[in-house]
Image (cartoon, rainbow over all chains, first blue to last red; front, side, top):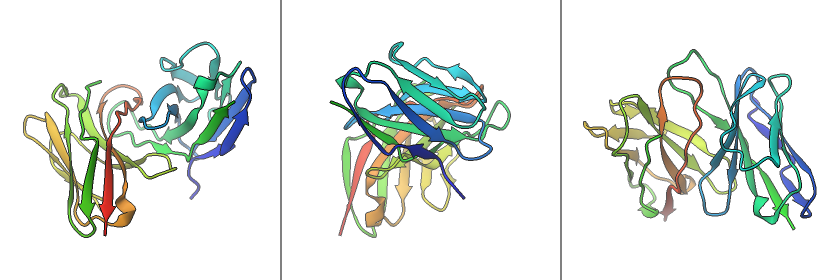
Length: 117
Length: 112
């Protein structure tokens, strides 16, 4: 079966430009997460969706970052006025939430490598 | 979420058991211990999780100390394909789906 897919796999942009990164979660997964990974570091949480709504956006670094999931499936991470410090691998994950307790395995996509020149 | 401490790197000979330690001394009774790994240029992959009992699956075994302040991930017969960064993560049991708080992990190098 299809896993989590992310497009594009690589994105090179210039400082100040706007970019959109797309995530297609596993079909039926209600929870979707965005993480960012800088070189040599572990992934850092950005935002989490349950269905269409952002349940936790505490990891977004500033108001240049925004994410949507309008139909509860595909999500887009949007970055305005990109800066060189935004260069990183952006990872998406999805999970199947069952109830309010218990194991929550997250399935990760391959990531989008963003380079801001 | 409780913080975890792992060695920066470890080596293991192919075919031997790889034992990766993790300290999580501030873990609460409402938190699982999770292990994920990340092979170069891929997204992280779930390995195993546990609450207080030892766990085993087709990939690995997880040994959690009785006081739950530390754990060990065991890859019984390491292969070259197990070369990766291994992350030990503590995550709440209750509530809505929880974010994973990754540290810098342990870089495991499996050699011939």
